[in-house]
Length: 331
Ligand code: FAD
Ligand code: NAP
Image (tube, rainbow, N blue to C red; front, side, top):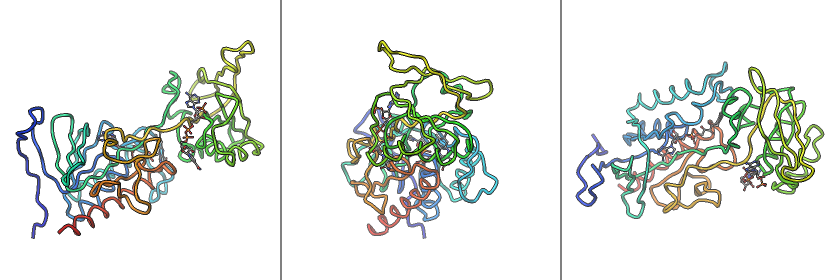
């Protein structure tokens, strides 16, 4: 028996900009590991999920080369290939994957309305938000020149490639302190480039950094550019910029790690969905439930701590199961 309605497209008489309204059981916003995993589980539970991919189909991993820490790939796999596999697996069970961006939401009623590309409304019984988080970069030209060739925003992902080498971490917060400490366990030397003369990190993290022999803190330093023939070989820095003691400094490094914060992609939802002060969506601990009944969040957009493909996929699975249980309780 067909339990769930399939899509039902109609004209919206209220709003002239909106071309159509479509009713769906489960709408998934985002196509990274969290979104595609949610799609696999939701499709297998017969929720007939519709996935909107956003601009970056496949998510952040499509910007990297080797992924070596995702279980099940003993020889590693490239990020784009892995995400293509996720997509194919979701499609195998009937997930409807479409290109489009969520541009507005209205979660004030029991039917959750999401506007796509400013001209189409999806009215969904359940919504899974899996829009990820974006690492902040300094904005210098050489960051993009050496992307994947020495520049990284994830020490847990890429640190292993720098075993026994010299690297730098930029930032003075908890993430920078954590990444520097992690890298110190793998690398020969870690420079921590801090723009002020204090760390923003918690006292405990500061102590860890300052008591680790192979971490050298470069106080009041800013990065001007990176150099190297076929990858990063060093960084040009400026010390005490704008003061009489201003000085140019050059360090030799093989890897340059950004740890100056992330921006969760939650802005479009934050009229209705509760976030922490940084913008990470708050979920009820141990679940993917947000403050709005029937709206769930998965992956980096709700995870300030781990931000890994496997944790994103795991929470995508949780969100689909939570959505399925919510719908079955409604019946
Ligand atoms: P994302 O992968 O960020 O996907 C977010 C999705 O949401 C995208 O499809 C985007 O298009 C979509 N989206 C955003 N806004 C909207 C909108 N308004 N409407 C519709 N869609 C929207 N992790 C590992 O475990 N191992 C690694 O080796 C590893 N390497 C990495 C290398 C790099 C260079 C980077 C940047 C990250 C790496 N990570 C790695 C981290 C990993 O990529 C993330 O933890 C993971 O991708 C998060 O998955 P996600 O599904 O939450 O979000
Ligand atoms: P954050 O606290 O916002 O710190 C960002 C750091 O980057 C700051 O030191 C900032 O310098 C520096 N920075 C920003 N822009 C810069 C630029 N253009 N050039 C050079 N430096 C720049 O971000 P976060 O460290 O990612 O932490 C985010 C949140 O997660 C925090 O609440 C943190 O406590 C939490 N967190 C907790 C843990 C933990 O408890 N284990 C681990 C990680 C993160 P200034 O200090 O000069 O502004």
